[in-house]
Length: 91
Image (cartoon, rainbow, N blue to C red):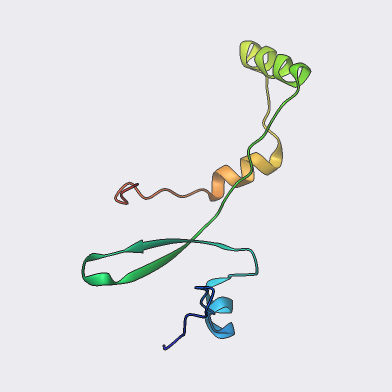
């Protein structure tokens, strides 16, 4: 597949490829350059940091001590869908 780099350095991925990979506007891609200059793009998910108020932190500490704390459903869902690649090098 032949694509071009524009004057800003951006590349455009064809619609069919974006649909096949489930990429939307704002999707993140990790770019690596392999030996010989091969460019590899991997789709990645970025999850927001959670910041708690002092009261929220106190409730979290208490829940941890009591052993009765329950994670919100959205965190449990994200944890179930999380994947890791122990073979991948991080730079």
